[in-house]
Amino acid sequence: MTASPTDRHSPGPSSILLVGVISLAVAMGIGRFAFTPLLPLMVRDHAIDAATGSEWAAANYAGYLVGAMTAARMGRRILPSLRAALIGVALSTILVAFVQGAVLGAALRFAAGVFSAWVLVLASSWCLAELARRGEVRAGSWIYAGVGLGVALAGVVAWLGGRQAAWLLWLELGLLAALGAAYALAALPRTSTERPATGVTAHGRPLPGSWKLVICYGAFGFGYIVPATFLPALAREQVDDPLVFGITWPLFGIAAALSVAVVARLLSTAPRRRVWAVAQTAMAVGTGLPVLSQSLGSLALSALLVGGTFMITTMAGLQMARELMPRDPTPLLARMTAAFAAGQIAGPLLVRTLQFQPPTGGAGVSAASAIAALVLALSALWLWLGKGSA
Image 1 (spheres, rainbow, N blue to C red):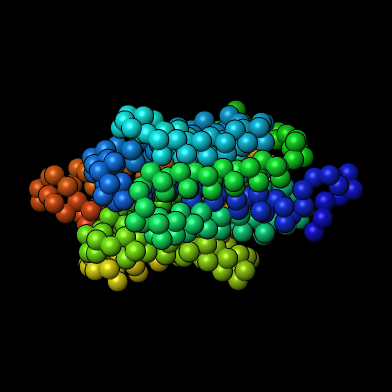
Image 2: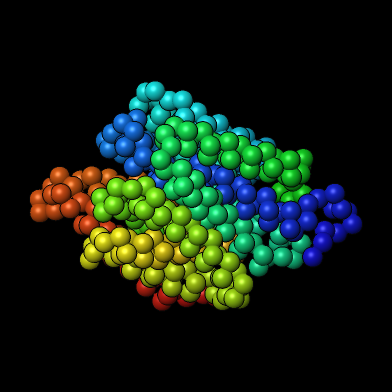
């Protein structure tokens, strides 16, 4: 439960967990996902139009992909890189409040995507390794509750403050991100206690079998992004009051945080592969619901199903990566995150394509949701039928 005498100045398990939770809340809940509940409010304020919103979203996805592809190079400088990434998330969020041009806004969203991917990969790698050194491997599940808590926080701020100007909400969320980053920077040790990794892979190549994780994680990114991007906008089409349509995003985040807590508490010994498969199946159901009905109740249930499995899938996938490469999971974590980013870029592009093509013209979100649900279901089946104990 505690560090050895030689490591008496290193952080304990509870401190490590708190750093992980707060880092992921800042990077993912705010840096990555704050744009989703704020987009309909920015359109309302005529700050941007729907086309510009799509460009900003695409810039963020592209930045996330670039961040994932470069994170593996930081494996030997995890702590300095993690500090820089947390500062970058806070600054790129605050500065959106003062943006006047579409190009500058897209550049800031790109930067936020890069920094967010770095934080996810580096915080996961450092926290899981430090907990493993202390014999607290199972406790690692709890850090992923941070994403749901951050999403819920951003959603509640946008929901309850939905009648404020959107730029003010950006500023408020940026300041919250800065506070969280400041805590993490103060709590992180000056140097890492993890030993340098040696001999994990040959010339940085992934171990046999890891490509399956990468593919399934990419399918997850493609499948979840359609509801994650368009749920608040679909809800706004039903009810124009932000105090009503805005509830979908807090529900998404609360479900994500609670689901991680349940799995960490009750299913800590269950095979990660099976946990991932079940979660991805439930996500497929939630993604397909808007195809059948776009009522507010159906959209709320979709938010609960997708939000309630989003972080379970993230947690199980990244934990499987660490089990496969226990000495240095950073390269595999980066590859999986890159596949996820590529999948989430493909999702909105598919919506945009289907929106203007027969026979789905005008119903691009519904058609893309159906395809995403199928991809999620097939990948979940592949995971369930796979071999191994992971």
